[in-house]
Amino acid sequence: IVFVHGLNGHPRNTFQHDETLFFWPRELGNDLKECRIMTFGYDASITIMAQKSLMGIHDHATSLLGRVRNERATMAARNRPLVFICHSLGGLVVKEALLASQNDPNYKSIHQATRAVFFFGTPHRGAAALDTKRLSFLMNVARLSFTRIPQELENSLRTRSTELFSINDRFRHISTIHTLIITCFYERSNDESIISPVTNITQVVDKDSAVLGYTNEESIAVATDHRGLVRYQDVNDDNFDFVRKTILVKVEDILSA
Image (tube, rainbow, N blue to C red; front, side, top):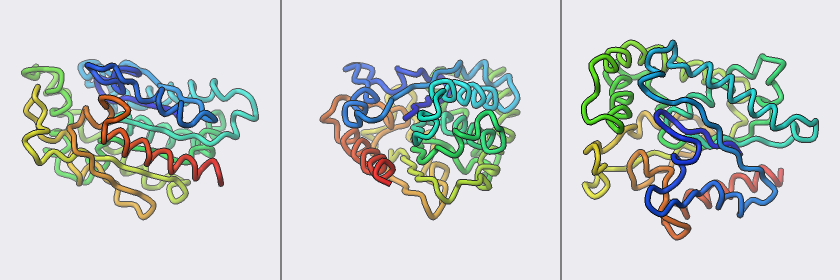
């Protein structure tokens, strides 16, 4: 099981509560002792990524593939099922990795072994939306880090938004799309009590953007904001309990197949 963070994220901090320091990938490992839990980290600074073609997603996807392949070096390891858990733009990194691996002999075993992907607040439908909607997602993520977005960064995001979301159109044609177990968690913040206290943003990725609309997909609302989708106070957190059990049910199905 590989965790992948998003823009301005961190391989540990993204999945760890700010105050209690509860790191839920470790707890998931306690539940699934037959599984290995890994986190993948990359330089996800929005100011750096905004300067690169596709915001550097292809490079990060290739790095992800190389890391996963090296952790599964033996033939026995290569045959183990793979599951990805990704937050926000990390979902696009995983999509690009699966697209790149399907025809690359160096990574084809990863493509064939991938059984499930859990998306948390990933903007899937940006490519079909208006330019303003695609840009709105990137600007909302940037506002999580800046009180006021620098003009230079805003200009770069405006340029990159269209090409970035082209990944979503290509993912529809991935060879294993009909056999993947796909789960999309999206933020439900219609209620003032869950508006981000830092940015006053109610939703970074709305439901229309956060679901794929595939027949083999389950879409689930979580009563929290974008960051809270993958940060839980402790094992008794209601959102964690629901997310944990959803993952356990689907992983157990994979292991028993």
